[in-house]
Length: 297
Image (cartoon, rainbow, N blue to C red; front, side, top):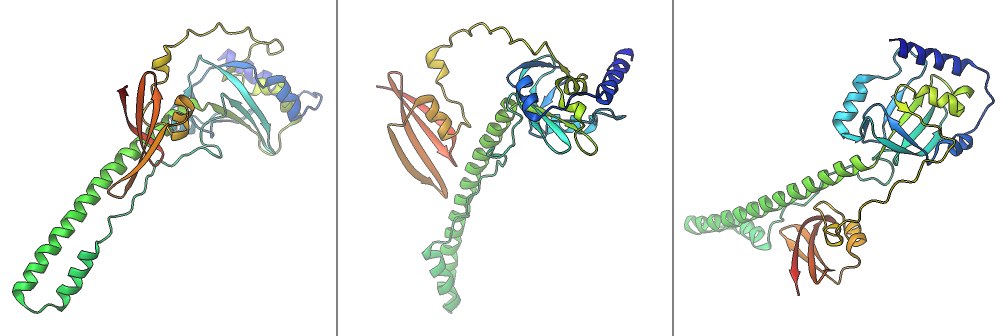
């Protein structure tokens, strides 16, 4: 209780003190590229966490919990993150971490995959027209039986297509979910009207986020991290389902062959890549990898 009261007093004194006005550029120079440690879990969305400093309820925990539930945790409490961007808007400051959160312009957020229903064949259309004209009962029964067979075949084709759509949709959902967990997060430090001059200082911004962020001494550059252990080169190149064509190309290079086929109304593209002493055949639907196989030469 005493610690919370101390932070509140510090924040009020900071925001009330007459400090020299600074700009977004000053905050960028001070913060961007430096690392901090989080005291709370950060949701994997560009919506981030809204903070209202100096108010009775600086953080709306119901909304915060909802964003964690909907988008997952991109940065866990106790973990470090890089300050990648500071933006000053008319009434709030964006404090972006590890990329600022998934869902900004250019990020795909829809997992829907659309496929048209199988159209009627010319034979089915002709049978329907002939059935309307035919008067002979026996001939009408023959036409109805053939027409029913064609309709059943079309429905089975639609069912196969929908199964493929469901699989592709699931892969896109998993892909988006993974990207959210890798896309960072942010704090939105919000004020009633305009951003006060005191908040446009490193000390004022740190005071506004002191309940949620541990700030090291930012004037010194952090010590270099030890080099990571070298991964197994072959294992590091294995693709994962849900990758896009561009991601797989970045991993394996240009494909040496490409082919296209239709499975019902689905358009399946197979791209072949060199992989070690063999080849890797990757199959895509809607530019989402859903299956691959390895062969040796």
